[in-house]
Image (cartoon, rainbow, N blue to C red):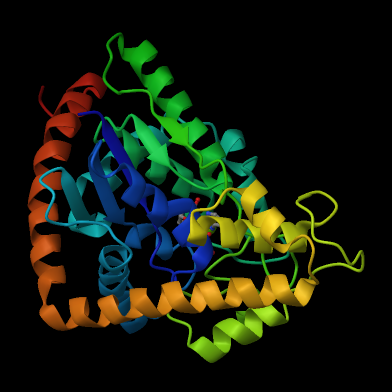
Length: 330
Ligand code: ATP
Ligand code: MG
């Protein structure tokens, strides 16, 4: 089985964007690939976090993956916490020393996250290297991701190629991003030019997987659209309307064409109502499952197994790399 790896930062409550670009893809591919699904808590602290909330978000993220259809019983499913495996940080340091400062400060996500902020952490610059380490430690071939992380997977590719060339052996597998055809960039409901993010400052901008029925309806009904007055899929000129069509399409399983047909003769209000109804139905079902998973105590069993397995695999890779760069006594 080829390996697939992905992680969603426990930097807040998960959004429907995270579902579309991340979780739904893991669920789609879980029977086909040896799947490494980790909680990148070390990435989360690139911006300040409340420690209690971080602990809670980590456990709840795992509960939510399972509630959304990730099957932890599969033998090829490994779910673990990044910080419970010390090899991630060790390899990251080695890779940082093979990265150019300029290539990191040119990253799109870095520019966005540091814009107009003073005193941001150095981790905000270097975290794509940690992400490369997350991927390369396991020889992951595929990295399902939304469009926002594509550039970071490309950095992981560049670093793998650079390292292999420099030390003269295929130390690392060259990873590829796996971008969904629809849902790779769910947009912010208030500013549809931006992507929806769980750490967004405006709570109205995102639908969270744990939102109440009332919150879901309010946010979708007040989502920004345009003044054209007709439903059509056009991400450039009609980003708000296209976003609603995309959300409907991902959660219903209908294609964009089928979804557009369904709503094209109606007003925006009907598209919004249809999308809100569908989200309420799906998210309420995820939430019911989530509560029973959190009550069952299986999250810790799953994470214990994942920690043991991920450490075993990462140790082998780290040992080879350590020798290649000349660390220790040989
Ligand atoms: P943060 O604001 O903390 O960066 P985020 O919502 O961007 O949070 P990440 O943890 O950075 O979430 O990303 C988790 C996964 O979700 C990644 O695979 C990412 O590509 C995907 N993702 C994030 N936002 C979206 C979005 N709006 N549409 C589709 N996929 C997304
Ligand atoms: Mg992000």
